Length: 249
Image (cartoon, rainbow, N blue to C red; front, side, top):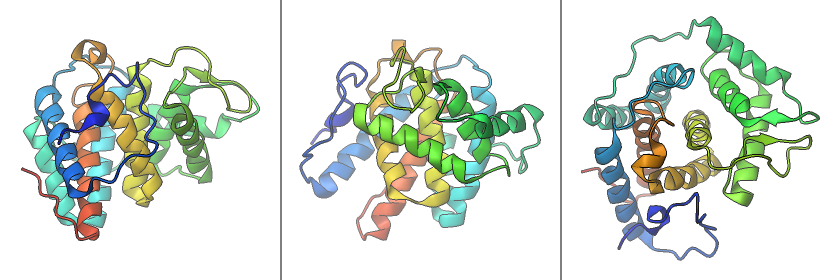
């Protein structure tokens, strides 16, 4: 069977994921094959360095490796193996000591639902706060708001007005979807709460469905590889916990 969820451009034709039939291990195998094909094809294809996205990705790779290893050393080895196949390197820096990063993390505390929120600023803050020691309960609160909006519409908008309900502006920014996927990767790797993996799968379906021309210049080098490696290893570890075979080729 083929993995249908990323075969059509999901920016143009969002999938509702309603009444999805149960397909058992066959779905896992098709998912794995589909994702691996995307990784092999696009692992280092997007080479434009975007700041601060590239900086966030560099720190995130180290954090994800550490968080996955805390759950499973075997999972960490598989994560590194997937990155190595795409020629991505994990920085050996263990501590985030960057004024720009810390400043972005602190920006999360200044956001309020009573005022308009720019999605790019929110996502940068959500990632930065998870990469520093300055974490708080509002990380989950704000991420849950984005998850709820995405799950309802399968879209992310440029901004959200007071009340954080119906979004405004464009909903086709690939950069926003990738940053959202990175924020979800970090939160799931730390919490192992299934709802964040569920949303991550849908965001990655969207990213994998897009043609190369749409991705170009929107994601930092190895950015897609990093989130797909995290997603694949997370799915594999969860499957193995449930006694389901899921071997990477």
